[in-house]
Length: 303
Image 1 (cartoon, rainbow, N blue to C red):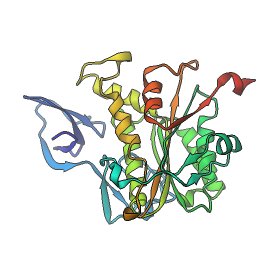
Image 2 (cartoon, rainbow, N blue to C red):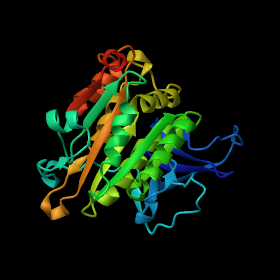
Image 3 (cartoon, rainbow, N blue to C red):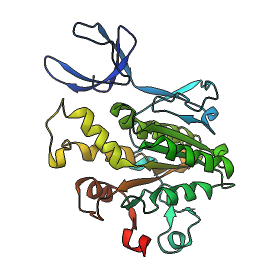
Image 4 (cartoon, rainbow, N blue to C red):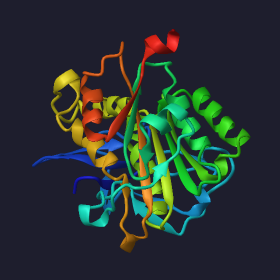
């Protein structure tokens, strides 16, 4: 079945991405250096899942929920599907509680509600990550669980963000999911869904959560990279289903109704533009999915 985990004889795992009449297209979650023609592979009958628990708070993990901060293993007694269905309309409540970012311009003019999806968009080096990290820092003492997903970022940049969280006391309520620029494309593709699964775990336990995706344009590039050998390309060489790549992710952000505990997941996705072009394929897709946008202008930033 699509999305099923498969396992090769030498231990590498993969995910069935493309199902055809006589063959199956599989993407690997490891380097696969030992795989060759004729290698034995078996279906596990399971969809990809990750362990979840409170023990993940304060930790830095990869897309497979394995710790990468050198602080030992994480013990978890529960698990969740990496890709869960988004809450239906009956399961949702209207958005009525504000989520304070700590940035006066945003909170006064374009306030964000718990359960909303607000896009942060702009050219590189215009402060997109700074807006997102400042929002996480402002949740201290607000009983909000934060998940920061770094996709295709430099290791030094991720380390700097983690250091800032430690210095400001934010790691105690934050989980960092990181797949660096040199990580396999499959893991960069999976990282946002892993972060969403962790945030959902707390949301369904009647908690308020905030998740940052930094950034979704790099996830789309990773998806294009790993999929071009399996499916025909479309506009800008992206696959035709790249819209669904982000819509099924961002629709998981929600404010749950009273029967489900009124937990919430607020999503702040980041998308990088080229020369301020918001009409490119990925920016227009994510703009159409989200409830609003925070556009950071390079001209104003450099003024």
